[in-house]
Amino acid sequence: MLCDSFRHPAVLAREVASLEEQLATRKVVDRAKGMLMDRYGLSENDAFAFIQKTAMRERVTMKMVAQRIIDGELHP
Image 1 (cartoon, rainbow, N blue to C red):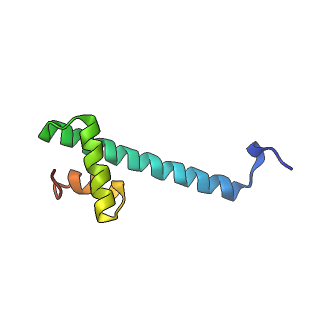
Image 2 (cartoon, rainbow, N blue to C red):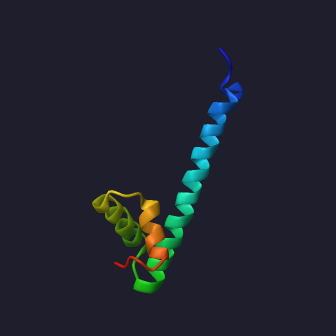
Image 3 (cartoon, rainbow, N blue to C red):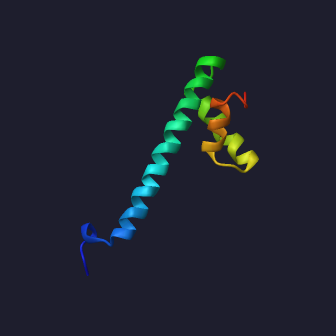
């Protein structure tokens, strides 16, 4: 059995892609949170909760909700 550091390149590539997507999502969500905080006076927790609850209610990703906030299509 090989050590984890010698995993198959395809497995590592999938892990890297997943981590890149997670980072991209976090950046978009953080930007949207900041906009909600600045424009509407929401706390960081309330801004996050708005994004999270909207995503769950609409059955879409938090990234999609955050992008709509950034694009000016969604307001609290």
